[in-house]
Length: 109
Image (cartoon, rainbow, N blue to C red; front, side, top):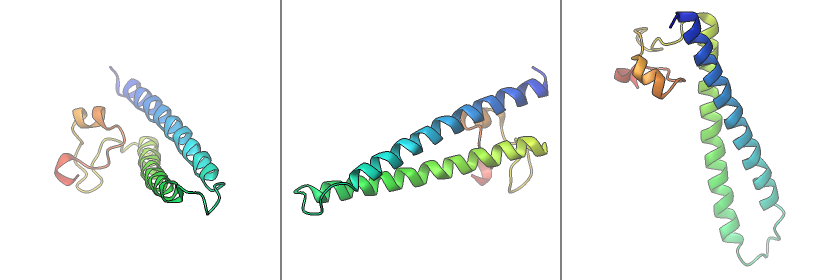
């Protein structure tokens, strides 16, 4: 497969993952807004608080993943996708296949 075909396929995969993560983040934010509607005196307020904490943690993780994807798309545009941000060496293709937004080679991960 030609390098340009690989870049198009990677871009498509990254954009699809970005859309999926954005949808999940929107869903989490809506469910967090719904949880805020509970009365403070609600018997299970501890459970609501715990779920809100889990939602915030998950939302933070998703935002980090989205940022990694945005960086990977920028590297594609710049022509340096697939190179370790630490040492500049190529990232193993198997690693990129498993994690297309990988920023570092396995040595610097």
